[in-house]
Length: 184
Image 1 (cartoon, one colour):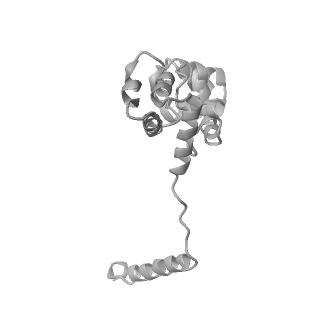
Image 2: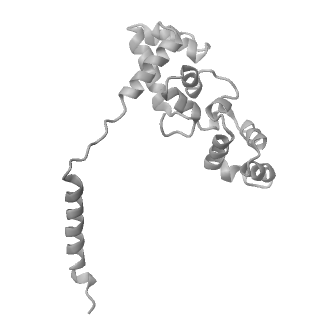
Image 3: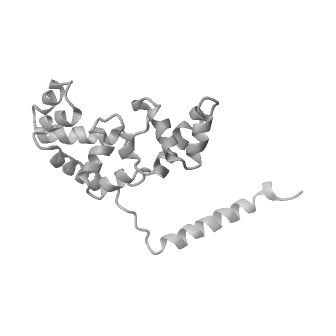
């Protein structure tokens, strides 16, 4: 949520549950990418990072160049020309797995069969049924677990930096006194 190039993911981290719904693709709309990557810069970055070779060919080169020069309607046109499943999602499968895990854990023993019971229903509805709570409640719990799972920062003791510098100097000195570096 912190490092992805999506403002919606950052808003989700800050507690905006509709943004969480969007970045987890629980809306299941055909143009989810417009919510995932709401700004022109985000859309351009996604296209450049994932589809530069695909679109930089004669059939789409003009639209591609216009998009890369800042013409957002052309970027949107390029994204719309892609199949829904190939546009990179802001969150990886681990975020989705954690959401399913939270729903099944919250729903108890029969949650998993409830999750699988109606495969034609929207995923958001299936998760609600499995968990036995509203989607906002489930997303709030999921978000808390994501935040709780972040790594604890490592604190460097006061003597850490001088010790590291000492080892660097010692090893550099040993390397420079090696016969490999002597001119013969």
